[in-house]
Image 1: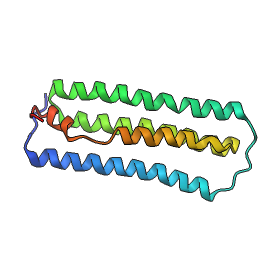
Image 2: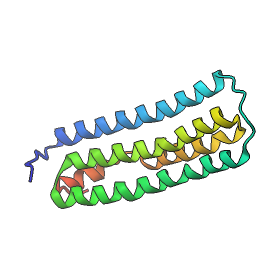
Image 3: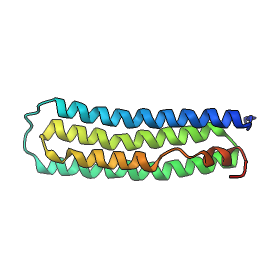
Image 4: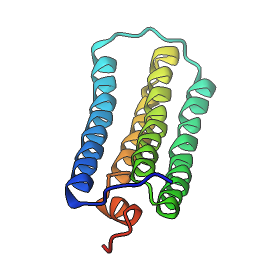
Length: 143
């Protein structure tokens, strides 16, 4: 087991890192939208592919909650702050997959329903906003 220094400065620093990562992932999703708006696409009308890509965008967001919770529980059991950061990074990345599927939908089919993938990604990122209580719990502090 790794020895950790649960002093408030370490927890604050890790929390700031989580906030920066969350902001960066949110910004990347917004930049994908900017790329979509600036690019002209002559896609093939394929409503089934569009529906499939947008429907598959729900799964990674849903899975992100399961994986994040399992990793947060493990971080408390093992008293490891680094697992909290890994849990959040994994949740952010899985949420961003939905935006990538929306991006694929737009470029492959030219469909106007790409915003569904971006909506799922944005909702997932908002719901995964970093909370300091997870760091405190992993450090066995009361919150």
